[in-house]
Length: 568
Image (cartoon, rainbow, N blue to C red; front, top):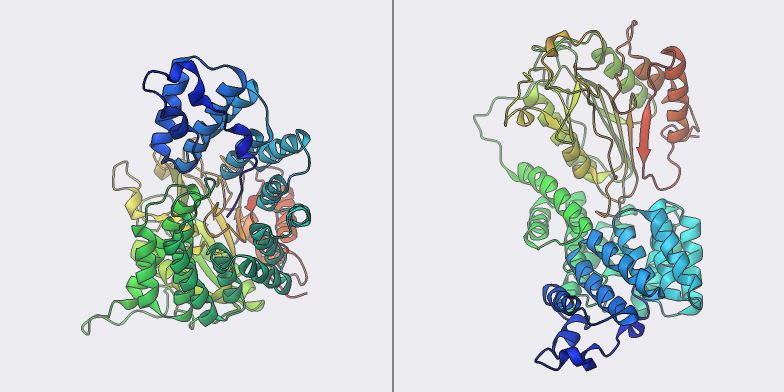
């Protein structure tokens, strides 16, 4: 459970006793203010009460609160916020601030959520539920120490708070304290062995430790419990726990190499109706990984031609190099692609050099690298899918791409060397969707690092062929900055995405053999004991200096703790 509700009893005024309900309307009150009422019925009943215009002050605030509860059940957090804001205007209370803070939390507005939880605590005595929810928001911000402090406060006030033990365990896991995390989640399971959520979180810990059989066993128990006893708390979106159970067990099956069972679980994930953002993100991941495991289960026809195993540099459509050996738990994998020999837009001289330099630096620090140079769509799609499949058993997955990249309708695409950038419904199908790569990597037990030395310009401009000696295709707009990294999916753990330049700007190809960004990156990748975000800071400073402030690299991160690419 991500969040809890506080003091509902304070907001259950006997509305149906009012004179306005004397003419056949006595059922509206209970329908509106009962947490077990289906959300559409609850919202409809509350709407009818508001339309009567007979309530004021605290009673009207109560109606708005309960209608917000209905919207919350449906996952419509903007309407939750609108109704709770009106309720706060009429009559502030801990419960209303808590609900609005929880909605902001679900939207990813953690600072506003924390402010609402602070206000809730000011309106009454210390409350464990509010401390718990504020802890969740601190955890969302990546401030695990403050999250643990709030969970500690909840446990002190409510020693049997199952979800606070569970979430404190999640925060400890994020800090790498696996023993403490396991102890807390075990305690949550002891407190309430009928709950599936702690079992799902223990599944993740077993996967981190490489104990896949235990992970699958816990996932199976969680799925059984989610079916037998669906969560009834009004703050838990319908089916979210069941979807989470399926996706976690599927990832464990896939890491074990049991693609048939993984396929079944991914299909089951997609078959459940998703109402909240986290569940929808899980289903996006399931869709990508279902395609990958289905490929793995599809036999190759006997008359199929043997794949080319050595790429021909600077040759359009060249196949990637040999696929890496099957990944083992703890393995560090990298996919490196450099596309410059474009057939239909201005060729770029340096991506091949950049990719080789970065691949060499990664191999020097122990990565298993799959490298592709000047790939057409078929080859680029194959090497990407092979990498995503192997990443299921990796501890660190790194993607580096140099070449043209574009934004279309808010989604980012990487461009193979054979693509003709012509407007039309099928244009994006000829490119590689960056969001699909991110969805395929979304998994809380792995660190994901994605680095793109690509342009941020519009492919629909008419001067495509005259793009010039840079990584930009003429146009005004650029690649879309990610609004979130794995938000709500498998807890969004451990992803960093870095671009060679800031949104809307051109990433220069450079005058030498390498682009300014890739030259700096390959120099700093192998620095021993340099944390990855510190490494990118050094890269940024070097690029800004070498380009005389024309290019400023940019990054966004949901990394859980410090990550070192080169050993200390």
